[in-house]
Image 1 (cartoon, rainbow, N blue to C red):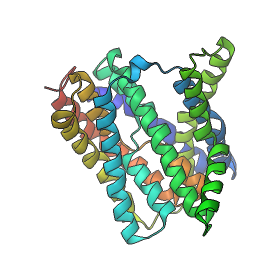
Image 2: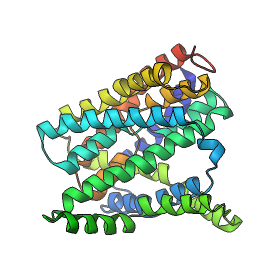
Image 3: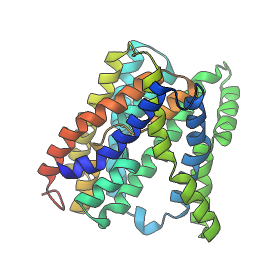
Length: 314
């Protein structure tokens, strides 16, 4: 239990600082938008760029793990998307809800948790999971949102507008540029590496403080069903599907299988909230889903860690 508390406490502390600051109006009325834009346009792109630029083939050469993790994410996204589309109908809203239901907090919570539970040998698996969620899943969701919001009747016109929007979106352009450097085997200069390290380190703390600010200044959402649907899909369906895939469908080392299940069981990460706030698509839903899923994960992840055992799944 102490392992989970050590990993979760910083999340709550940062959200609490933001909440208190919002109640006391310490940062001003425009703090939410300013901090969110800082994360989306500067800090998170720096983190994604550096992660992709430093990735190696040895770190990602686990086809079974990649396939299982990707299919689990796709299955949960599809389940959430289908449920939301039947109720509300907007592609952008359904996409953000699907993103939240399948977006694990792998970067901020997964790294310290896996280091404490499985040790440094689990880091490559966490890196892959982070890239799948923060890059591939994020980019796919942005494509769906842009398609919906562009509102063009012409397929060619919509495609052109979406492509231009994606090229201008730093959350897509930054990891693509980093991947290109990694493929060309171009090492980042020391000064650039220090710059991206310092800037990228601000992404998670600022995002969590922003959530606290938003919770303090916003009215409770009326979409309670959407919030709990996200939470249940994330904490229960996602790890269940992942367990089935890593246990009976795909072949991989036991440590990688255990890490995949644990990462799938993590609460909702901050990415969906940042995207919802950027596009103004009911950010109250994702902020509360993050908070509730993080609270409940104290129990669900503790049970899972005890069941998985250390260091690997039986």
